[in-house]
Length: 126
Ligand code: HEM
Image 1 (cartoon, rainbow, N blue to C red):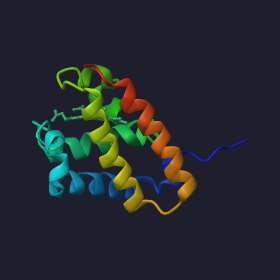
Image 2: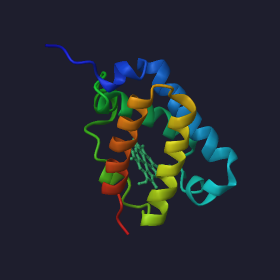
Image 3: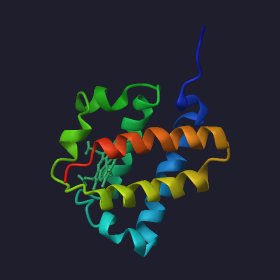
């Protein structure tokens, strides 16, 4: 029995890129996210590429991040960012807004919100 992956349901690379670009656009243009956007010290182009590679594998597509950079350890990658409950909530609301603006399928959106929330909450470290 074959199961459709989240990657496929999202529309593969094009759909995922649209979601990430929406997230980045909101981050850049909405002053409410300033406390978050100021943390991207390696720049948005770096983040955009890494996020696309990571999410592609995480959602069941090709494991691009692992192929290029080794096994991802998100907790370690986020260690130097003080992720309080407030910062986690800010990240999540930016992603939630990006999902709302880029994904029409409500069931898919709800599912993605749940997995993003779980991961975001697990990265809280302060
Ligand atoms: C809990 C709230 C979160 C905050 C505040 C946060 C913040 C950040 C920041 C500021 C960076 C960029 C660091 C830099 O410029 O070097 C980053 C990188 C990254 N984040 Fe997050 N993040 C959060 C949650 C997540 C979640 C839920 C995911 C995945 C589902 C994720 C995936 C990534 C990836 C893949 C990178 C790139 C890592 C690398 O450089 O290899 N983040 N995050």
